[in-house]
Image 1 (cartoon, rainbow, N blue to C red):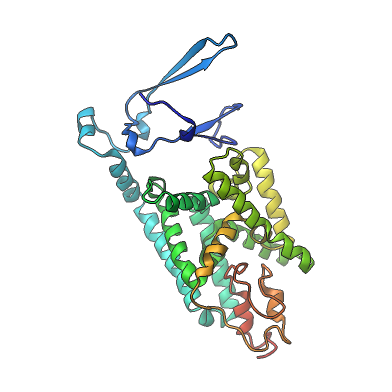
Image 2: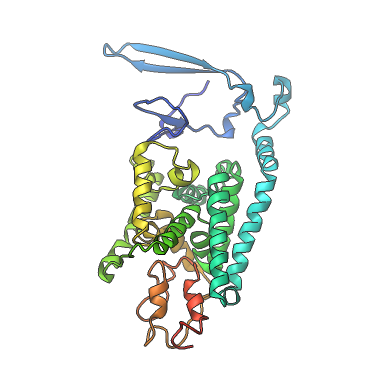
Length: 371
């Protein structure tokens, strides 16, 4: 018998299951491996409430997991000899071995691009084709096919893991793609700050950039906000990050509303098969992106804000600059999709996504004024 307390229950703002019923309230019950529950055995849920006369009323529901969802077919006796949690994680990783190998190759390819960026950006045309191919791969395969989209929720769970040192890491282990992207992203912070994930491995970022390229090709005029407004709007993502992290640590229910600011689940994980209100929000952000490239990344992304803060541990400067950059030349400023290049010519690495557009200009003898 297990009593469900508030700390084991989290409300959900919406139900994203296909053909889900329209329910007034819903949530998830989180049970860790310490409860030693076998999900293949019958479960009886008992719900106790008090009616208006303060009398106790009991509702019960018996449930048995359909066999098609079993990861392993075993008897009650075998279960006694098996640590189901550990073995299920091994099964999950074995079943995803092809995706794991492809993901590692994808991450290593992106890392090589950043390591040798000066050579790779020497040809504007070849780099453009490489960028389009890689972003398409990240969006379609990494995002829409295997759901490899990091979220601020993963960032919050990571913070919780650090605070509760030695806590349960099962939630990370059951998602091989998320774990690998997260680990490589953390390592990359020492080399390129937030550039590896935000510029090369974020499926929603890839979707935004591909749409921006298409928008420019069809002649949609790009908007540029005044510098003083742009600068103030960039603080929004840090404010959102603070509210989300603080709310999560204090286990405040309103935090769930702020999670919905992220369009990742709607646009990437669920491929827009989601409630109309979140689909409208994600579509609205993508429409703005047609006029202000990477608008969500610039102003609203709490995950990007968190990676920008952690990215301050960066040990190298991987983007080259000339002595003329900023004074008198400002050619790179105009090609930076996030406005990360300051008037002084210095690059604000908190806002840099590592797209390498400035390095293409740096190496272009036809367009770089100093060259």
